[in-house]
Length: 610
Image 1 (cartoon, helix red, strand yellow):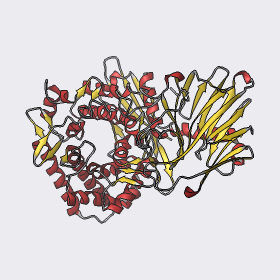
Image 2 (cartoon, one colour; image 1 turned 180 degrees about the vertical axis):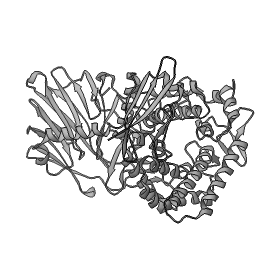
Image 3 (tube, helix red, strand yellow; image 1 turned 60 degrees about the vertical axis):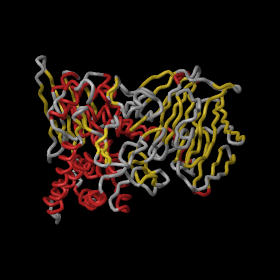
Image 4 (cartoon, one colour; image 1 turned 90 degrees about the vertical axis):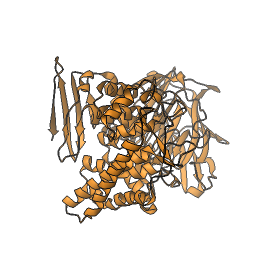
C-alpha cells in the first residue's frame, strides 16, 4: 500500500513535492514540454514563484541511460537502472536531493546532467534575469530581482562543470546531488541523511490520520494515495500563506472553487490546518473585494480572476464544515464578517455572471451551480450566525432570518423553474428567463445539494432519452458536449445518488473514481479520466473519493458536538470488517469500527483514543 511500482519506460508524468518546492518530471527522465499556462514550461523544479531546473538525466560516456523501474513512495521516488538506482526526495525546507546509490556497494562512472532554465510563474511581470556561475565545486544561480539564490552541489563533493545552462556532475559512487535555496549548504550536507529521514518521518506522520483497513487492497490503497495526493499539493508561499493548490502540471497555485471541493477530503485526512490556512488566504483577498472570493491566486500573488459567482456562494459552507470538524470557534468568530460580506455581496449584485463552466457564453446568464450553492451558502451563513449567538456573540437575528428566507426562495426557484419536463432534467443556465440545457455536468447539482424533489431524481435517472443519459458516458458524467469525464463529476453523482437512496448508482460512481487511480501518473488521481490533457494530479479528485466513502457510505456526521456515524448498506459490498483508524475530530482521535455478518446485518461503534 505504501509504494507503487511502475515501468519507467511508460513515460508517465510524476510530481515530487515539499511545501516550499515541487518537481514535475517523467518516469524515464525524458524532459517533455508540459502544460499550457506557460506553454510547454510547467515542468521542472520550482521554488515558487520561480523555476530553477527544467530537468535532469544520467549519462555514461555521453549516452543517456534509461531507468527500468519507477517506484512511488509517499515521501520519495526511486528509479532503478542496471547498476545503480536514483532516490529522489525533498527536505522540509524545499531542498531537492537526487541520490545515486550503486548496487552491491560498487563504483560508478556516470554523469548527472542538469538543465537550468530560470523562469517565473505564469502572469509574472518581474524580470527573471539571472546570473549563473560555478565556484568551489558548486554552481550558484542568482535571480536579483527576486532576491533569490540557489545552489547546486554534491555530497561528497564531486567535479561539477558548467557549460552555458548545462550542469554536469561526475558521479563515482554513492553521491547526493543537492539543489537548494538554502544559502548555507554546510547545514545540509553535514547532516544530510538525518534531514532526509526527518522529512520522510514527517510525510508519513501526516498520512497517519484516517487509516482505512477494509480487507480490500484496492480500496485501502486508493484511500491512502488520495490522502497522499492532497499532502503533495500543499504549498507555503511567503506573503500569501499555506494551503492546498489545485493540481499538476496546470494549476500549481491557489483556487477558490477547487479549495471548496477539496475541504471535506482534507478534513477527513486530518489536515485541518491546511483547510484553515487555505480559507485564510481566500478570505484575506475576499475582504478586499467586499466579500467576493477569488478564483485564482498565482504563487506570485497575482489574482487572475477576482472570482466566479459560485465561489463566493460556497465560502460559508466550507467555513462551517471546518468548524464542525475542528471545533475552532475563534476562527469562526473571527471570520463571521467574511461570511456575511460574501452573502451580502451576492444579494446586492445578483447571480448573473460566470460560474464553474468556462464556455463561450459563460457570464451571459445565471448558472445552476451559482443558484444551488448560493441557497446552500445562505443556510450555512445562517447556521454560523446561530452558532455564534449561542456562544455569546451579538448577532442580528433579522440578518440570518433574511438569509434563510432567501435560501428557500432560491431553492424553490431551482426546483420549480429550472426543471425541464420535456427532457426530464434540470437546465444548467437561464438567460433572459429562458432555461437552457447545454449538456453541462452541473445539471446534477440540485440532486447533489439535495434540494430537488424525489420524483425529479427518479425521472432524471430512469429516462431513456433525456435526463442522465444526456450527460452520461461509459466512464461517467461528461463535463460538456466535448465528452471529457471529470472525476469530480463522478464523485458528485455518487453524492446525488446517496441523497435519494440510489445505492447501486452510488457504488457504481464511487468505483469510477476509485478505478481512476494511477490512470496517467503513478499513485495519482487525475482531473479527467478519459483524456491526458487535464491535470494528472488533482486535489478535488482525491478529495471526492474520501468524501464519498467517509461522509457517504460510512455515514460520518460532524454536525453535532459529538462524532457520530451510521453506515449505509452499501458498506457491506466493501468488506465484512471495516476500520477507519485515528480519525481527527475536535482535538481528539477516534477509531470507527464496522462489522457486517453473513446475513448482511451491520454493527458499528466509535472508540475514543487516549
